[in-house]
Image (cartoon, rainbow, N blue to C red; front, side, top):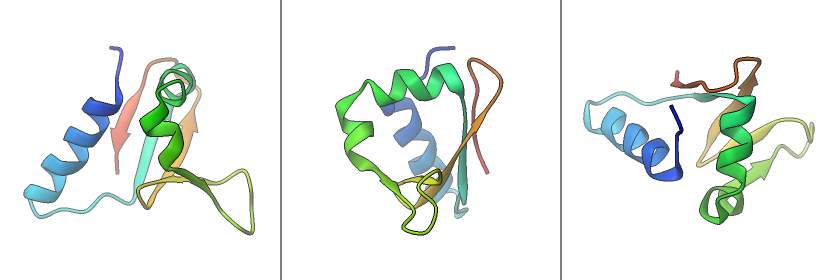
Length: 74
């Protein structure tokens, strides 16, 4: 499935409404590339000061997995 920034934000909001809080965002490498092409997503990505390979989106740690099209909140 092709995930967009709207899908990501909707899943985060739905999880918060259920009373749960996600700690990390797992995305496939192609999904990550597609999301990074969206300006709204790319603008909200921040890097860890100690390790520039660690990235965050809205406070969620972004982990890139080897599957092409993958998306999960943990």
